[in-house]
Image (cartoon, rainbow, N blue to C red):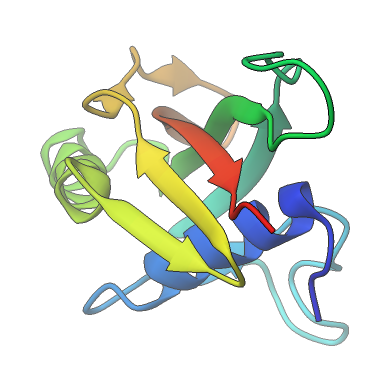
Length: 141
């Protein structure tokens, strides 16, 4: 169970991603992917969590602003075109755009429209990174 603010943010954002309809398999940070004894799927999502420096908004022990990005890379097989991968990226953008999520006393706001970056071609697959910017405040006690 997540207890620190960053862990709560990551858990809430990744849970929202997992509740998308027809979601592809997700490779999460520091989790073996694919599971032992299975082959890496041709299409999947790669999740990265990129918290940034905490912003000092007030003086003292008041809750401070947490800012950062969750990045979801749409991993697609080489030679299969770009349109379907862009559709998946667009669905991720739609899933997070204009959202505020409440989790364990933390208010997480998607601070601007998520965006898809230019496709990156690797040896065996293409990647389209989708960046989801957030800011969050702990609930005041």
